[in-house]
Image (cartoon, rainbow, N blue to C red):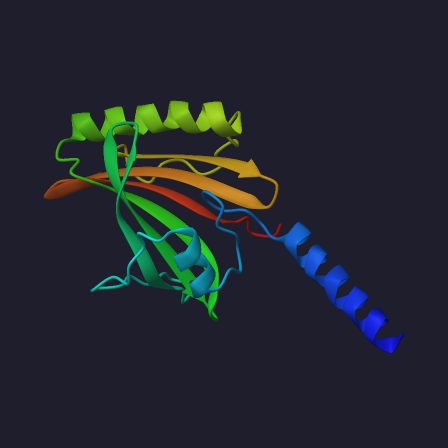
Length: 166
């Protein structure tokens, strides 16, 4: 009888934790372990030069090529305390400002179709060559960010992370 109650409790806690898991990108969920990400994305590999985020999260695996709207992105999975913390898509091969702005516009349209109206941006762009949009989906924040620089290729990122608590 005790074993039955223990098994029922374990099952209940498992179901609750799955129900509370926060979806990030394409089936990945906040808090997933590295092995779970590797099972979900077999093409993901450990990067030769992993990136780190300001919050201490480290890139443990990367999908080197993923196409969206005709542009190639790398997909980086960042972990903190052995749990998935953030997923970042970074465009590659965008060489001109005109191409970068077009890619931003296409992604903006695509993400708005998928997630609905974007959140009001309370922060103005830091420069006139920086564009940013965001969406909220339950506890997930989706950020689209584009920046131009005088002596390098433009940067275009899509970031999926847990929404900061208010």
